[in-house]
Length: 413
Length: 145
View 1: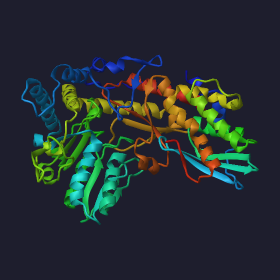
View 2: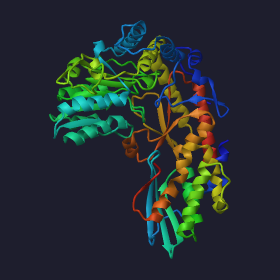
View 3: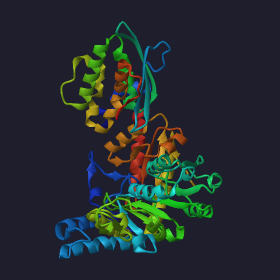
View 4: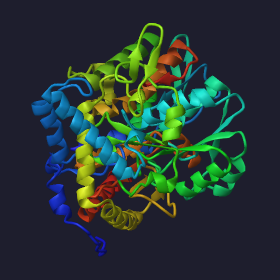
């Protein structure tokens, strides 16, 4: 195989020990997990935090005066502080807990959107978006009579900023943009995109699902108005995510769902709403999920997000070089700035067949349209195979992937 | 191992699909779509006096769905509507249950390995869903969902 050697700023083998799921064999082969863009695996510390909540501290939050409720409230709210710091938000109350990125975006379309978007207004998204950052805006446009505009991408998978500049106009109300493309790995120049939107008088929402686990995100430096991400892609549990919003915007927005916890006073004549962030958090939340997310943030901090970025970039370079050697394989998405995602097609071989053969060799990849059908249409392909990396992946695993792809060729050619 | 799924006949029909063309004088047509993977298929039938005289297809799909469509078009010729629908049910049973394969399936038994790959059952059944809507002449796109 390739004689490339890569820099490892931490002991990968030791970190892998923290992930119980990685210690198994699949169809008799060691698991090679390369589907991190779909969901990341969980370290023992996250699993332990969830178990501890259910085994020792379980109580509802924000309600009881009893010991357990105080413990669970404290640990749950501690996560809010950890996330605030992690994203460098100005205030803790700007961190709203939601189910995931999708719910975060829907919260904005249904509260800010319904109040502020009118017929004839325009919303801009990018041609790279995941369905979760397209469909909620389409639904809002259908409801209000606003129009959806799309920033085109070039053949490499980079956004064409000149075209974006032309789309911006006084009717633009919102620019909703993915930070990193899940299908291609493109890292979008979100700071520049936000600056241009603000100059045009529009607000911005960033879908950070694929960025937060892999790079330092500073919502103040970006000047994002809204920023959403999912806990489960950040090595935390499913069912919990975060919507960040600027205080003034959040205060001016109507509540999302009605129920307990989001109110101050309720009579049958009138209800007054709670302060931020609780105004947007009706009902008993995913307490265990929130606590698990806190443990995940701690875990990532213990490694260092900058080290993770550096190592994953090395994996991307190694992997790109290695799979490019396979005849008939074409990488889809060759943007100038990329996260560690390699999406590809193989001549005459369908991604599902590739995925099945790799699975039998213990290698987990994603095949399909990656919830980004417009991206597939742009390249006129029905689907791709995608290998997406995390800091616990190794060059040896990339070598296994390459061996698997040679086996695929052997079967189908 | 994976060879149980990709048997020689399946690989052969996926690389060299039979009856892979459109049909000008088709009197039954239907389209099939698998929204999970984006596979699309067009099925053409010429049915005379209740007998399938010709069957052909076009489309892009994985090895399993292409081979299934190819072998299906071969096995349909000469069958009447009731026989074709019976074959469809038997094929579905082959993919989803452990019962002994029905005798009429003939070459189609090569798909028995698919039952060990639940994620791939829809690949194998796309052509057959499309067959059902062609025979029922609903004019709707058959979906695996």
